[in-house]
Image (tube, rainbow, N blue to C red; front, side, top):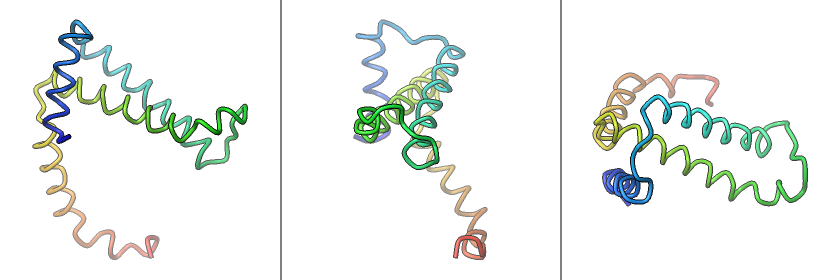
Length: 112
């Protein structure tokens, strides 16, 4: 699925199954909540925090994928609501980073 197709698919889902978009501020708050859920799992999977139960640990990789998909879904909702073409935005962002960081990372001793 391309980014454009994802934006169209989410829009169709929202306007049929979801009835309508939540307001932009509500979706921003939901996005922050979903990012927090990703952060919680990352802290337990890759950081020093532990899981409360072995069952939580066992399901964590699938949970992480699901939480990342939740972040993407809400981000796409916000893009659709604000008229942002994520394909164009990502392309422009990569061009900006390429120009800005052409030598930055290669000369960073911390990355060697």
